[in-house]
Image (cartoon, rainbow, N blue to C red; front, top):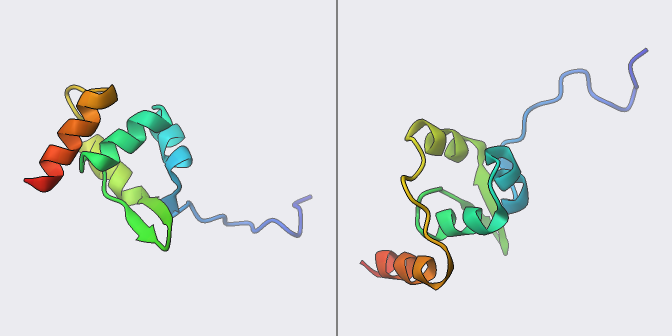
Length: 85
């Protein structure tokens, strides 16, 4: 017997927080934050919250992701340089 408090047709999420989006892609939160800073994945900002639309994850995967992910200070510096360009 179905639970009366649970809707029968649950809608898929429209957007995820960073931790949820990272789990969907199977990557770490640090890598997700890097990809966002580098402009590889679109985000929506609602107040102080950063939300990753489901469609942005689909686009990222369909485009083939990135060839190489840089970590540490090099990644941050590269993201800043690209943002200023």
